[in-house]
Amino acid sequence: MTACGVLPVTAALHGGDVTRHVLQSLRAVFGVPGMQIVERAGEAKPTIPFAVLVVTGGVEQQVLDAWHERQALVPGEPLLLLTHPEENSLPAALEALARVQRAGGRGHIVMLEPGNAPHDFDAAAHALTVWHGLHRARVGMIGAPSEWLVASVPTPEALRRRWGPTLVEVSLPTVIERFEDNIEAPIAVPVRLAARPGEHSPHPADIETAARFEPVLRAVAGEQHLDAVAVRCFDLITDAHTSGCLALSSLNDRGIVAGCEGDIASTIAMLWAKLLTGQASWMANPSDIDRTTGVIELAHCTVPLSMVDGYRLETHFESNLGVGIVGDLPPGPVTVLRLGGNELENLWCENGEALPTIPRSGRCRTQLSIRVDPHAVGEVLDHPLGNHLVVLYGHHAEALRSWWLEHVA
Image 1 (spheres, rainbow, N blue to C red):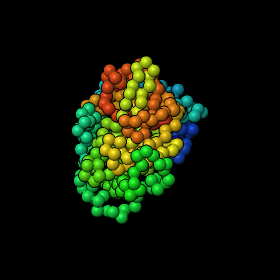
Image 2: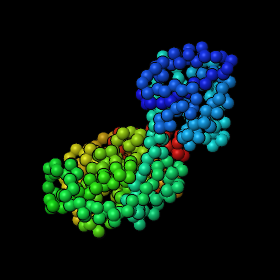
Image 3: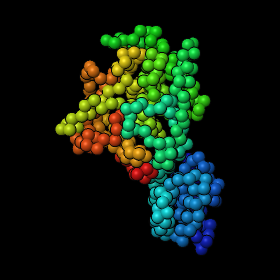
Image 4: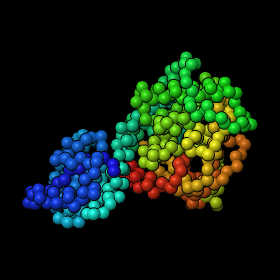
């Protein structure tokens, strides 16, 4: 059960007995650890979701007062209204939410049934937890986005306004200098595992060098209190003669979302997917798209090892320097998504099926073919939101779209 602060509101005509009766009838929801029943909105913890339980009718103004009080503490938080089948609870919630939405606010009504498992409430509270996670998130821009990402870079103000995260600029030259000065740094643990030899296997010393970038990035993330990083990784190749692929892969497996090429749009999509599903994801280039079959062929060098059945290490594709990961992504259900627009207000998101994939030359090292609805791939070609697509395992498109419609669109 997600922790949540709950304010019951009751018309003075009814008194406390009705409130106690309703709370008792809904004890499956409110009688569990993590529920904080409060007497006013200002008492609820600002770091967890907040809901108003509409106990009776006639409380519309109380709901609005509570919403305004909460907005002063947690600006922009959507209003979660909980109703039950008696005492004109639902009509009051409908009236109050209509006024909130007319005032430019967002909100959602969850109807609770006494004695029933609170699945809808759990989902709504989790959605608010994701909102809180995004609005508390700090995303490090370690170097400016790569010049070719002309459609993937919202302004910090637009990103904060629409999605919530704060962008934090971090000097890439300073990070590279720290990397070069820290020759004795411990390396990312996964690369100590035996990897199969490949056609372009790097020298063991090059693997050690590439792996030392991960603890440096992790230390920077800790010092700056970063939840995610977007790294201008091609400068690492030109200035430090290694690649960031191992480091970004390892960070994603450690729970610090890491996007490459300084791609803010993909990094935010990966952070959002992580908060909503708990899963790591992979950003990749679409190399080929078939309108007829709906097959998208993807490739990139930074796949998290938690997503693969096996892997080998080769050089980074474009530069033939450093280390790239050739991961064996298993077939199965996947979700593919892309954010775009000036404020990342647009979403393309589809469930698909990862297919057995035979790698092709002339592409980034990890490759995966995914089949989605052919109409959907036509949207990618005719109305693209940008280059990289984000992939995670499982079918989550409905949950992602629902959250986006409620909190972003």
